[in-house]
Image (cartoon, rainbow, N blue to C red; front, top):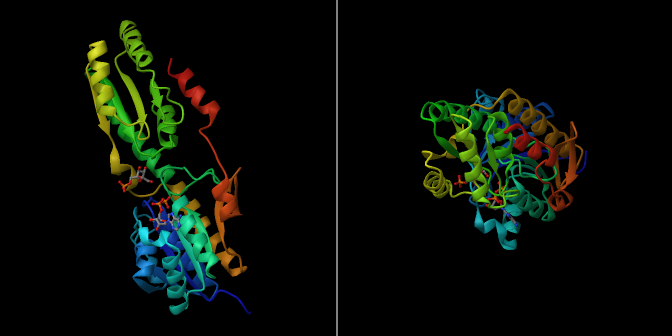
Length: 324
Ligand code: ADP
Ligand code: F6P
């Protein structure tokens, strides 16, 4: 059929996320099943510009569904923000016979994908980030694994915090987005959840609450602090000085980005990978796959990038009520 995509390129870009390998596997195997060829592009847009392009077959994605990270590696590539490099990227695709490309990453990666589409390469984005900070979708690949990893870490900190009758501040990732903090705050029964979106900076209220709980005999005080608020060490020092309650800060860090993906991340990542290939087969371009209101859907990339979302107000208020 004229115009039909014959060779698909796949790349991962931005921060890695558990489940990206499951997506790559689904893209490769779905495309092969439809009679297309697949090329893996290593190190995101950087690898595209440096022509780090390898042929992929069914075996290239064996034994990876259960592995965190990305077998294609990932990178942040400043050159790709420039129009001449975007054109060059499209030319390189054509040179390697790549007429459709699947980009797994976040908003930034989708901006790059849309530039490739504008330069004539059929392009589909798949939301992959632990931060859940992509507005068009209720699910991003890696979030589920990351919150479960963080939740288990916070449970462990709670054990030692209770034994020492301490206050613990646990900083979780998420850039400016508080989704990881909010979900863990609820799942770990935290006394406080501080997020960039909602925190008003009122430390005196936190201090009063630590003192109040100490008075009624509470043995721990767990504060889940989002990366967007930061300064966990400073906050710990100030709380300890003002309350006399020993306070420790733990920044969980990159542990949240790694590890074997949860069942949900493996399954949703697989569906998104397969759907991306379906769209390319239908001749679609400049689309992003999303999970919205319980369904897998797709949007125009520019429309998707223009969408906004915020922390769920009900969940946030509920987290506060449950911590009383
Ligand atoms: P994420 O995809 O997780 O949001 P980044 O914002 O770091 O991560 O973006 C990943 C990569 O996408 C960047 O390193 C760059 O190569 C590309 N990119 C980001 N913004 C743009 C843009 N405006 N135009 C073209 N490419 C972009
Ligand atoms: O976007 C994923 C993420 O892990 C954020 O939560 C965090 O702010 C950032 O990436 C860290 O990036 P890096 O691994 O480059 O330090």
